Structure formats: C-alpha cells, structure tokens
Length: 160
Image (cartoon, rainbow, N blue to C red; front, side, top):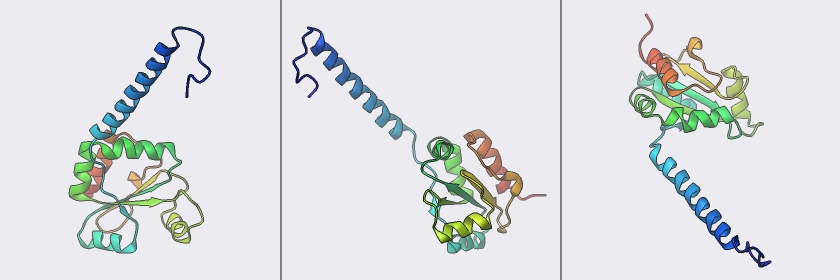
C-alpha cells in the first residue's frame, strides 16, 4: 500500500524496508517490556463485603480511586503497582481494592467519593486493620514504589 504510486527514487525500497524493520523492533520492545514487568498487585473491586472481610481478617485495606484517562493513575498501575516488593507486601498483608471512576454519574461511586472525601484521581486511601483511615498516609498523586512501600510498611505496623 505504501508504494502504489511507484515512487520514482531508487532508495524507496530500502526506506520502505527500514520503516518495516523499525516497526517490528518497536513492537518487539513493547511486548518484551510488558512481559518483563511481571505480575501486578491483585486488586478487588470495592464492595462493603470486601471491606468487612478484610477487617474480620485484621488486614489493612488500600483503596485506589482511579480513572483510565488519568496519567498519574496509569503510572501508579504500570510502575508502582508492578514493582516486586509492592506486589509481595500487598499480597501478604493487605486487601487491595480499586474504584474505577472513569465515567461519572454512577450513584454508588459518587457515594464512595463522598464517604472517602475524594476530590480527584488518583486518590489512595489507607484503612488500618480496624477500618479507620490513616489520613497521614493518604496519597493524591503518583508516588514511586520506594516511597509507596514506606506508607505500606507504616500501615502494616500497628501505631504506637
């Protein structure tokens, strides 16, 4: 399709081949980077039952309010929530919950936004094992994995 007009210069077949090879290299790189990033955090959708079950097990809860159009939300998902230590700690000590607020107007989500006083995304709410929010840990922007781990460890260890 690219040379229907029979390009008149001799190097065109080389350019066409080079563009094709470059496209294949980019595609291979993207596929490899997705495969190498490893598993991510195992999220559950928000339900009152999920929260009650976590509290019955004495597990702290981390709630991620996000939207698909939100760049910092995607960075959290693609980088922070795929970092091996974050994934391991999340699986061992926490119940990880997501609330997708991409499309407004969902009455249940609107109720959750009010309940947790969410003004924008991303907002990450940290609930201790008793169900009380640790407001000092609340996150309202992208945070690298190393800093997020500090908050997770703070939530996992009982406050003195």
